[in-house]
Amino acid sequence: MNDFAIEELRPNLYRVPVPMPDNPLQALNSYFILSNDKTVIIDVGFNHPECEKALDNALHQLGRSWESVEIVLTHSHPDHTGNLDRIWRRWMRICAHMHSFQEVKYLMDMQSTVFNPLLRHLVDPQTDDERTIQRRDATRYQVSAELLPLKNDPDLFYLDDGDIYRAGDYRFEVITTPGHDDWHICLYEPQKKILIAGDHVLERITPSVLSWMTPYDALKEYLTSLDKVRDLDVDLILPGHGSPFTGVAARVDYMKQHHFERLEELYQLVAEGHTSLIDIARSAQWKHPDWDGWTLDQKFYSLGETFAHLIYLVNEGRITMTITQNKRRFYVADQWEVRRK
Ligand SMILES: [Zn+2]
Ligand SMILES: [Zn+2]
Image 1 (cartoon, protein in one colour):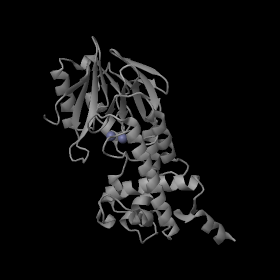
Image 2 (tube, rainbow, N blue to C red):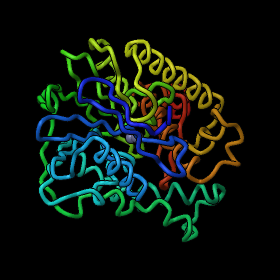
Image 3 (cartoon, rainbow, N blue to C red):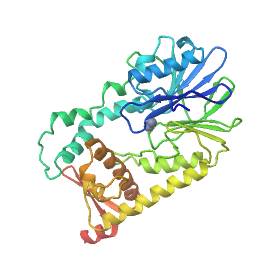
Image 4 (cartoon, protein in one colour):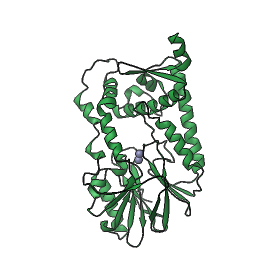
């Protein structure tokens, strides 16, 4: 079967693969739910003509028009929301967690305080001076207008934990699942036993869990959110990427184990004397070896992942973080106690 073919998974519930050009994930799953007068589309793809075309074709194939469309977003990442500006029509209602669009502003605020200093170290880890990073590299991580899909000021309909969202014959419970994104939501249909999981639970990939700011323990949030869905009565998980699958508890347990092993590995690296974020990330085991040969993007995300795990260890009291002149250093907690005496 064509990888991008539309598939009816349950009555009036379709999986519509939306291509993600030049992205290793290859495709986003949009889910379409049809009723007499409404077409609900859950997640919409990147701000890219191919993504717009995929949704347009799917509507055409299903005999629907844009007039009938209502959008639901699982979270604010650009592969799920970026297409909004292309497909938005004046009458269109958009449903999302109320904070998910404020998240974008939060990311923009972090540009100068967090992202740029990290990039400066990545471009030249040996230097701590205020040398300006190359313009090319600086602009690559500008949180761009692509992440601000709501230029048109549409009607927003806010969803929160415990809300009921009806789409045709489906009656979804909204479950907030922060971690992969602060304001991520899943949609659970207890009668039909399906879970629309966004990027919270994927079958083959471990969703990224990134932290950049000290107080936010994204990994702790994520692990707690995994427990929120682990024991749901679910026959079919509909993920944001990859094929629908079964076995939510087993997949949750696997991912939790993955993070616990990562925590131990990073703790050991700190115990061995690796103290800077870059040094720890570079020394960790990754699927692709040769960290130094990675692209700037890959390094950047590996730092966010590493920092999320380190913050978890800091909050557990196992390691200590110091910040001196904007540089973060990590030490095993008791070693730090010894140093202070
Ligand atoms: Zn995501
Ligand atoms: Zn995604």
